[in-house]
Image (tube, rainbow, N blue to C red; front, side, top):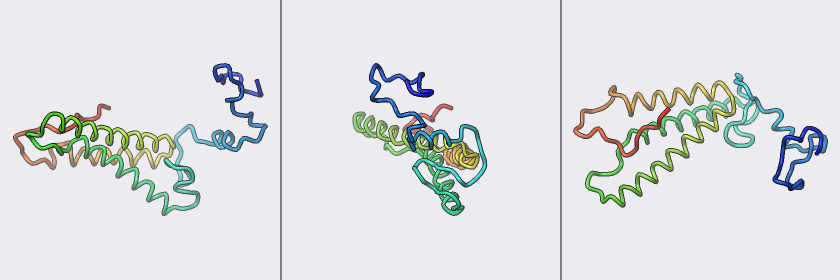
Length: 157
């Protein structure tokens, strides 16, 4: 095996392994530069390679707004009622499944954004979930209704 790669196995195939850092593998060097602890600052990558970019405070703020809105939408989907009473079970079940898929995909996107380890991203994600719950899940803005049911159960933390 090559310099420091002893722990990486590819089920008997040595060709599937990445070259060592000394071989000039740019992606390996980039992975070594990733933050693995929380940090403050606008110079980060969130969800997509090169986004929001370095030294671009405006794009960083847009990225924070995007993460906030994603987490807010996750809460909205968790507490909304889209399926009308009386909808046939098959149609209702398919609609619930589609809503669940969308909600999970958005929740995973928020999680991946948080994995940038940027403290600002973490804070806006938590704030988005908090504001979303306050608006859509708490009694603060709810109108009294006969049916407290939603289409999807809340995501368990």
